[in-house]
Length: 305
Ligand code: AMP
Image 1 (tube, helix red, strand yellow):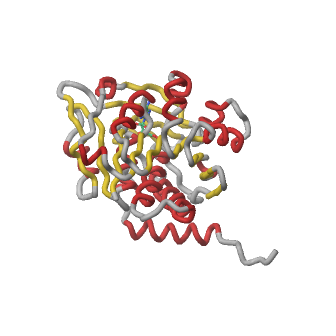
Image 2 (cartoon, helix red, strand yellow):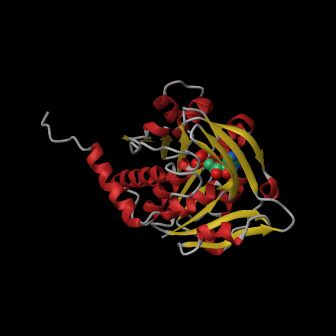
Image 3 (cartoon, helix red, strand yellow):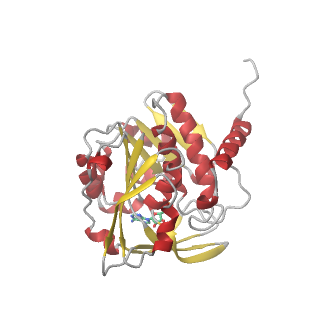
């Protein structure tokens, strides 16, 4: 099965308590497509400027990533984001965002991109997400990510698109910000009441909660000793999760739970180094080994009650 992702391919400058990286490869669609491509064919829909070199694009090479939708705008610069983290790595502070090529981005999906089984609307202005959603009426599953910026500046259009998609992947702080509800489960129910079947709440180093109308599933984050840079963890999680799910025949509760673990495994690699430096060097075998470690980490169920 195949996935289409629409989002940013970017350059990031990042400062964490452990070091900094200037003008390195980033972007929601970049992390997502590399992670998802371990399991499924990915159509990448994004825009770059002429400062994005072939060397930068080599991250997509020799993977199942179709680049027909990677549009280059001559004379303009690639999306740029600069952010920093304190010792609480769950909170990113944006220093600067330069939309550059992304400001005028109005993707027109081709047949192959429109008819993918799974569509991921990566973090972007909700109107752009709606525009893409409307181009893909036949897809089996549409998932969306968002961020505090759009909750603060585009609340109404965000509410409209939340009412259309099947699955929402969102940070814990963003659930509270959007719903103005301190209790996460109650906040999640408010978002589910808008229409989505499934809500996945990312809780940084505390892991993930998947909430549907029928059930709640919780997974921890992989307990790493070296967390270097949390940038991209959310998009990598989404890529691992949706990539695995798209490779299966059905999105049953069992497969969704496995997908959560694969998403968490992929994200745990991303944070070990800056940018995509770790993600791009791992193999499917390492992913599978860490999946087994997750099983050991969470297994406790022998006691008869
Ligand atoms: P996350 O997975 O949430 O850590 O997302 C990290 C990526 O999001 C970075 O590589 C940035 O380039 C990208 N990003 C930051 N701000 C925005 C924005 N306003 N719209 C789209 N992408 C963004």
